[in-house]
Length: 251
Image (cartoon, rainbow, N blue to C red):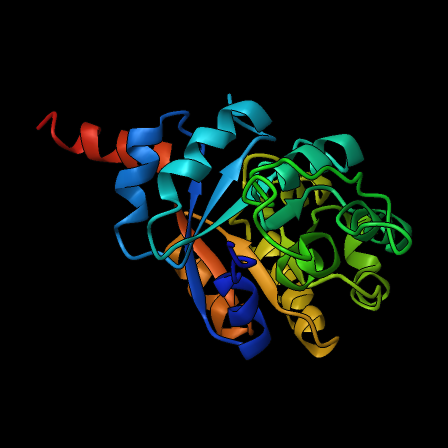
């Protein structure tokens, strides 16, 4: 019989270990497999701002499964049926976008927990259960599921302490692009005002006792956020890295 798969990313969050990741938007299992062997701690498959959806994420999860990297999936929204499907397909870490307040954070928690604690629908013959080969999966699953919520609006930033206090929230990610737009700097995610707001948010997340996360292609910005206490960070997006590399070869 198979055993419940351990979530190395969640263990890293608990240990406060710095974990570096790659943001992934390319719908290709060969690319995902190649990236999985590069040495990143985690890879995030983004279904919110890409051509990916739950069905197309499945072969990507399968492609990276043999490698020592933790897959994370970002659903399109705080949508319980979509979250349920991603969990059944084997995702163990989810990043829920645009969580505005403690109530929405609690709804996200409920979506990843089985009754009576939550509302996740029960199914036995799924990839998550190793097709009914994991004894006691439904009672133990939440132990290895990491729930990350994303704050990316002024309302959400103002509610950081309340969101962090919601039981079951395992980490909080600061989204600079939407935060920049909320501050009046759409398309300028590295504007000094955005940097200042992000650093303040990360310090408050850490002070509230939660791991903080961040993504930016601006390496100096990532360095500042890491120094402020963020422990799961990404410096690149697969498609952006591909574009940058190909353009550099035009020479």
